Length: 536
Image (cartoon, rainbow, N blue to C red; front, side, top):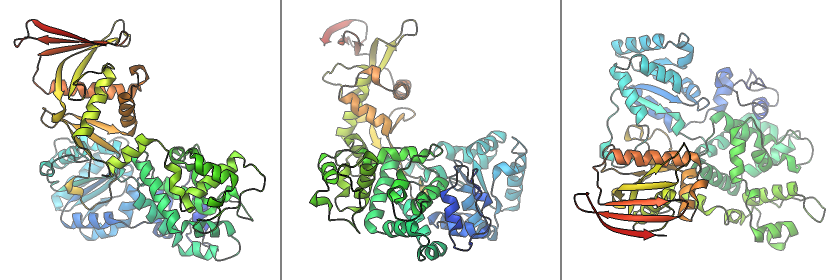
């Protein structure tokens, strides 16, 4: 890895064995795997199911396309298994961009055609754009058509029987393997804590900060609380690259490069939540910072050093500064340690955002996703267009259409068609069966799907949209709906309208300023009014 601001060492083990980890702790966001020495590479590798999976697929004769975002570990992974894949007869290209002629993917496509002609599997790591260029350059080729199909269906929803076999090529999208998942974070910590070079350092007298942080990060309670935070970050839609995680974890070990006593600035928990504008992950961590979650009982106990917080620590209580009233920085640091190390630390989040808790429970299967929840979502989507409550607002999703004047926001909406709530299903995504056993996928969204309508329109509900829908059900005015969410709801209604036969037995019209809703009943042939009802 090259850190942009900091060059990582060219030799893995220097005098004290900590050079790699120290340099990681100081590295920038542009660190790259290609600059690692073989020794460093081995020390940073975290073994998982995916290596076994790739080997099995290649031995079965399948070609592999590893794709994903920069920093997801494509090159690192392919480099790790390259020898095994080549031994199975595969042609391996570790970096698609390096083999292209500018924007021309011709050399790669030629190599793939040659491999097919020779009967060899073809394995390549490619970012999204180079992969798109490859698909567009030769879209009629069967193997690239299959790549395009898999790219359009990266996740599976609903009935398992609808999934198709991958054939002779398999797309593995590493962006679906969110490194923030608890299992992966745990594996990274296990790797660094088991490193022989680090062990040699912390047994000496020169690294009291690293020694204490390793001691605390080895506690089962601390690790369990870290896993809880990681799972919540995934549920809220955050992600991180492998390189970001390595850098953050190294900083948790070495603190802020302080010396001497184990002071607040060097606590592992402070390093974890220390903001660094260069890293998106440090901004995401603010969303799950225990110090930002208010709990009157425990906040008062920590502030007053009450008896209930003098005991119950996994090791020993942190020592706060001796002045009578804690400054904010000291209180925040103490509360973070309380979350990680105290038996009652989990209660810090008891009063946190209930919408976030409900969404996480839904993704993890701890909350039902049946008819009642579908009705709640249908009611909330209707509320985005019609704030006036009426009897069937949770029984049908009305296909609202707005009217604008001189590009002003719509002041009224009309619906002449509707879809019964029974036609929708709420689905949690999973990896397609072709990728079963590849890696652990943690969903970050659910889908409201109408499988009986042409095209099976699907609304992807991530946490921001989920929060908006919950607030709409509680009365959020349309003017406060984020524009991003309005566009997504509009697009969903348009797809529903395009995929079903028209029904015009009732017309609904709502005016947002007067908050008046009119229900007009039509005759069976739709040619005359038979009744009008007003709601206000």
